[in-house]
Image (cartoon, rainbow, N blue to C red; front, top):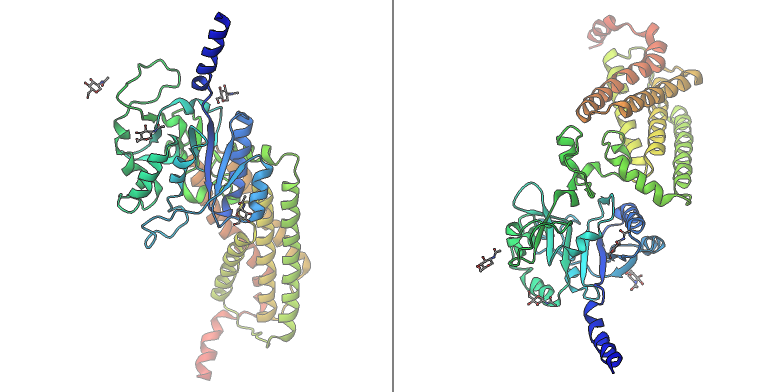
Length: 446
Ligand SMILES: *[C@@H]1O[C@H](CO)[C@@H](O)[C@H](O)[C@H]1NC(C)=O
Ligand SMILES: *[C@@H]1O[C@H](CO)[C@@H](O)[C@H](O)[C@H]1NC(C)=O
Ligand SMILES: *[C@@H]1O[C@H](CO)[C@@H](O)[C@H](O)[C@H]1NC(C)=O
Ligand SMILES: *[C@@H]1O[C@H](CO)[C@@H](O)[C@H](O)[C@H]1NC(C)=O
């Protein structure tokens, strides 16, 4: 009899203690964020494999990207983007309201939303217990919507959809909207993961410590010092995202993200594939430049003259070098692995600058540049890049590193261009330049 009652009680109690369903969720609306999405997926799985990671992909994402996400164990949800009502003035992809779909995902009880440019450094599952809505205030009375926690609720979702058109958004995106919708969050007490602080019954929302959404901007403003021990690093600053190869080695927090990426790519051929692709591009470029040189020198009208001025060689060599840098920056895929990308960037720059300059010399002065000179210019350019890079990696203070980077870009421009001019332009023409006789001659003709 007693056993029967206990059994009945057990059955009644079971539904109440059934565990809450948790999930990490992100939104992917651009294929440019595929590598960070895969990296975050790998890191989340490594830190706590028991919690599913869902990515809501919008219509812009290719099938290939979806397959790659699935390979990382991500559960992919197809859904349409919710545009911002301010779309006329806010066209960039980040201005959208798709995140409010999270409240409708009632197959889960609590969701931690993560932007794709964050990197958790340790298990963050304590966040699921924080409250009905939790986020981090960083530099103002506005919270950041890169990391937030919510309890799913159909009623709230429909209420939000109703308010989309009328609620104000200070930035034109979801962050502004959520700040309007949850405007009382700033009065809520801070969540204490250790549970030692007394619970304030009057609030179900909680603010979160800055450690759960650490803005890398604060690190660099403090000359490379962390003032907290971050649980989640948020790579906020637009052009310094850690999957962009040219941000290395200037922004040192990016190395932590790169470690996570390398863990994710371990065992795959991703790094080798990129290196082969970059090397192939480099070889094709050199071949193309050589063919261009042959064609131009054979078919273009002869522009040789014996009065190439110093000003002209200065301007032309600087311009060719700047063009080569710009062109080579465009050539490497932006999320290629940084070390490989830097090597091929330096090589592409060196070859482009050198061969274009030798074409110029041939067209203007009729002088054939020696292969030996070309090779010496290429080697010299690549060595100066390698040297700057190696010195930059050694500098530990951020401000000093920025200063050195600026100086080395200026020095690079000066030293490399001078070397190329000396090796490829000035010397072959030197005997023919009669700088001070140009003016009288022209005068005479005129
Ligand atoms: C993973 O998350 C669960 C909560 O769902 C938590 O109880 C558990 O301790 C976490 N595991 C690790 C290894 O942190
Ligand atoms: C998701 O959308 C893509 C492209 O719109 C489509 O090819 C794919 O079949 C969809 N997947 C699911 C599971 O609906
Ligand atoms: C959903 O939100 C509404 C409005 O805030 C609230 O009254 C209701 O209790 C919530 N439902 C659940 C299941 O938490
Ligand atoms: C909660 O709100 C009630 C009514 O507004 C107030 O009397 C009470 O002091 C509040 N409790 C706390 C802990 O702030």
